[in-house]
Image 1 (cartoon, rainbow, N blue to C red):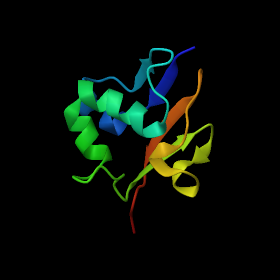
Image 2: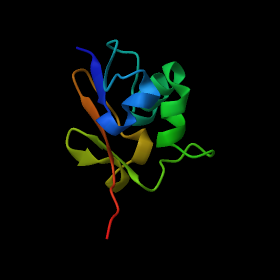
Image 3: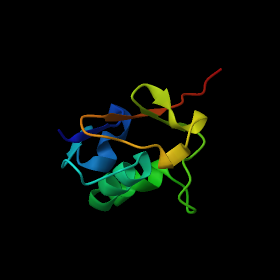
Length: 94
């Protein structure tokens, strides 16, 4: 089963209108590799998710299997067959 990366619709303009990406089985082993695979196809999307050092931007949250990667191994969080990597942008307001 492929790994699925889901990004919010607000980022669709940076990814050709696409918000769901299926990565071939066995092509990625971590959340960071999954984001890298999508960013290779859509560099503008990659720049919205990560800073110049490759770290997640403050307002970007990534979940694998419903767990926030920042509370675990970060972008090294393992992904397996059929896992979903969910990207959510924090929204500030007031």
